[in-house]
Every structure is written in structure tokens, then in C-alpha cells.
Image 1 (cartoon, helix red, strand yellow):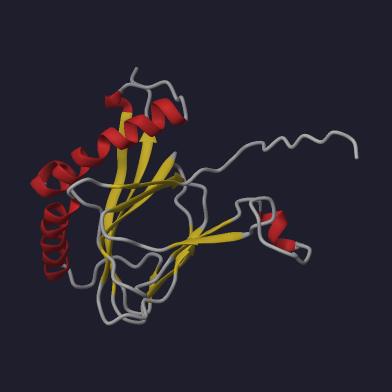
Image 2 (cartoon, rainbow, N blue to C red):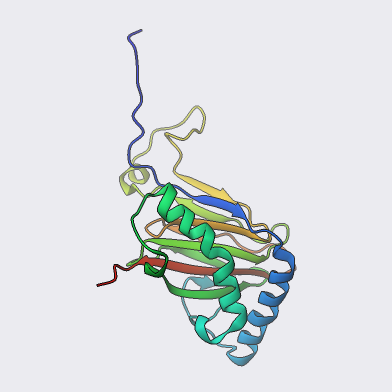
Length: 204
């Protein structure tokens, strides 16, 4: 057998971290999100299906709790952007290009979609009980989904989709080109997530 070397080129990462002391923050966020729904019961029609509620974009600068949340995750974002990705930018060039919340009640889910025209996207779990619906990410190389051989086992070279189980206080950050969906909420509890997009804008 000749020597073999594998070059794993152009990886698509998903960053996962647990926010410290998230319990009190999540209580405040939950109250804020339910109040948003109370004042706008219709919400926005986006990827939500089966009765889920999708908020309009948050006004971060006008809401103390929204700003508190943004401030709490900003250090994580800055480390991912400047150290892991090694993108050259200043903190003020990292822009929240939209932040919103989704309440998935029993039997609701989110259809497959992606977030165009931004660099990174994220999901943060405010309320996530057992069987509330996993988030599913799909291989961004569509050709592999069109024609894929059978597998003797699943590994990082042949995987076509992967799921993550939501946990309260969990933050997932991923490239915005990743197609993703949310499985049906099979629990009797609400599933509450905050999503946002990040754009890096060079100051002139």
C-alpha cells in the first residue's frame, strides 16, 4: 500500500459553545420574546411552519435585554471571527445584520432554508426541552446530494446531513450559506430560539 495523505480542503465549521450563567439571561429573554408575540401575534412568515411564531427583526439599540444579549455573545463572536477565521476586522466592523426570535409550539417546525448576503448566522436556545426539535444542517455541496453511493458507515467524508440537539444556553454559529431546518417539536413545551446574522463591514 503506497503512502496516503488526505487533504481536507475548504471546511465548513459549526462553532458550539455554552454561554456562562445563562439561566437568568434566558428568563429575561423569554419574558421579552413572549411580550413581543403578545404585541404582534401574527409575526413574520418565514421558515416557520405548522403554527410556529417568527418575530420581526429586533430593535437591539432600543431594547435593554436585546442589547444585553448581544453584548454577552459579542466576545465569542469576536474570537471566532478574528482567531478561528483570522478575518482582519475591528469590533465596530462586526454588525448584527438582523436578530429575531422563533417560538415553535407542539407540531411546528422550520423548513429548509439559508441566510443569504451575510457572513455568519447563529442559533441561541432560550427554551429547549426534550424532543423539542433538532436543528439539521445539510452538506453545502449540492452535487453530493444528487448522487451519493451507499455507505458501510457514516463518517466526516461521506456525511450529507447532521443534527444538533438544542440545549438551553447553547449557541451555534455557522456560515450563512449552510442550509438548515428544524425538526418537528414533539414535546408539549415551547421551543424558543434566537437567531441572528453577522456581516463584517469595512469602515471607509
